[in-house]
Image 1 (cartoon, one colour):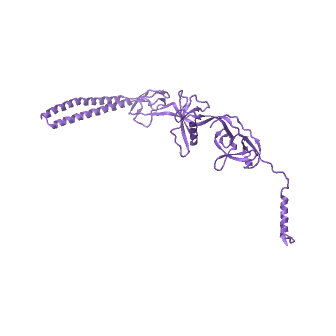
Image 2 (cartoon, helix red, strand yellow):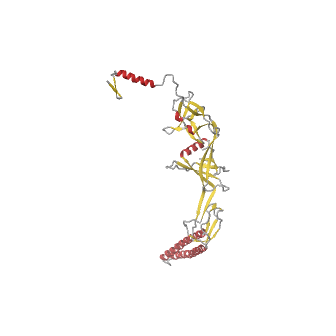
Image 3 (spheres, one colour):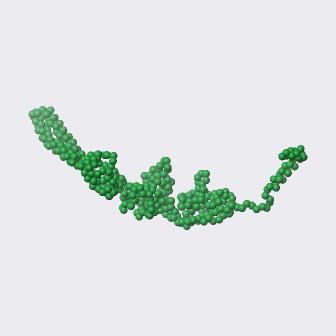
Length: 393
């Protein structure tokens, strides 16, 4: 007897039972001739190369061309301030006058000491000449001659020291006229008339900032630097001298600065922690419109590409190696994977330089429903701004 689920059944051969169970399973299969499951529907973008003006925008900030912190080089009391705060000053223009009286007296004393030494020089030289004649006639001892010669040498040393003292006094007196080392715009004064200053003090009296020309510093990945250098070498970017490129400036309000500048590719170092570099451009600033610390964007024109390929970003993914890929529908309506080379983003699109050709159909919607080799039904995806002709980064 065979017991199944608590029931006793008459004994049946095991082969008959297996055939019976197999028949039950066959009844669950779909009957022959039933309809196949529908093919997945996807939205595609047909690749159409287009003519595009290529530009690169690099965000950055302005920084002064030169900054000079003016400090006194002698001690004294400020007698006058000779500039207007916030006004333009020129190089070697006097900014302050320190009380010169003590330094004028020191100069006069140094000159008097020099004159005394010079007066002794003539007397000492005459004594040495006379003693030499008398020594030949044994009228004076050689010791007296040596003493006269030593006194003459001492007088000559006193003259040299006196000349140095006069020069030092003249320098200190000149330092009472505090001059601007560069041309630029003066900041607020940190001291007024009557204030006491000391030589080489920590606090500056005023800061002079040169704003014409002016720098614009931008920080970019080192890969951007390599690409720009290649394009400069190939002539895509207009050169402005040795290892320099012509660059335009866009201000914070979106307006374009009237005068072009020069982007310098030399003197850059890659930051080991971030992999970025700082590129410096220099712009003329005759009207003083650009001020330090302003946020601006540098724009480089990279020429025109006659057959640029744009693919929506939603249609580009990355494989396990980090390479950009796209699902493409072939002529047989089957899906295939393409490995791409994407140069940069242009709005909501990738600029693709290899991996796609004109007429390829790139899947942008329904990617989760397909895999390579699956046959699909396609419909065209409406790409906004499809006729865009300018690419920027």
